[in-house]
Image (cartoon, rainbow, N blue to C red):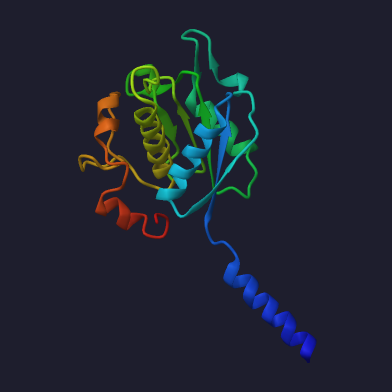
Length: 198
């Protein structure tokens, strides 16, 4: 009887300390400064109720290369991430320095900051268009974290938001919109994500 009680106590304490946080992975496709990656990781964890793991660097999927524009097609990267990322991760962020693009309306190859699958598992973000050389390191880091958290918002089912300064506002191809965002969700988006955001 004593052994059973000890076992039950062990199970109870295990349940108390077990993490119910969402598991998110960052998949780097280029060499990033270790400190910078850690800051990005922290930026995700501050917004989402998540535990973030940085995976080992991989080469960007060669099938995503779009030779005509020397870019990489974001939707192909998303399919690759869906298929090849460990199932223990609920979400995965592909992260690259290379230019990425997708089809937007009648524009076949539209350069983008990032792309996320609505209610899906994966998103991909590129720093190529985020003006690393034109702003301070702090401003650049803020931009990257905002874009990643925006794309992750799509994977949690959020569409673009009409509320100005909300993290889910449509950037419409301009970095000024990203800079104008607070880095947080509006109340309406927070309500939709009540079990996901901190």
